[in-house]
Image 1 (cartoon, rainbow, N blue to C red):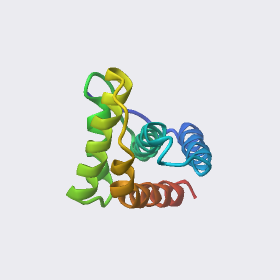
Image 2 (cartoon, rainbow, N blue to C red):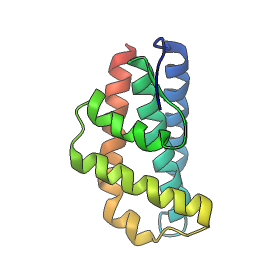
Image 3 (cartoon, rainbow, N blue to C red):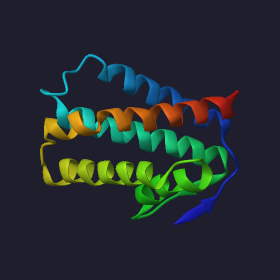
Image 4 (cartoon, one colour):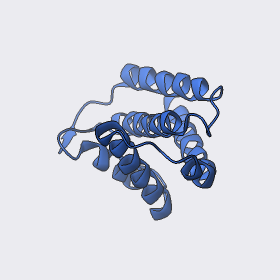
Length: 133
């Protein structure tokens, strides 16, 4: 469910910093050994940066489908393609299966999708970073 809120610059800065720290911590991990941890964290980074973007717009999603709506919000409040949204939603589903069903992520998934996931993360970082200036 969507809620209109006042844009929260300080909270956005904090979320942005957390996403950057999370991303930095992944640089040391081998994707073949830690595919599940890396995939989960890529999702968290995308979700956090998308949340930050929406907070700057005065938008907050809550409830059962909030994470899906947050990712869908990337298209509405920033210039993300259907493909980028689809990749992010696929990652959300994979992350949920990992978190709630204890399914391991196949390293092949990261091998095939890492480039696109990192592109999405970089794009979100630039958008949020520019809006925080």
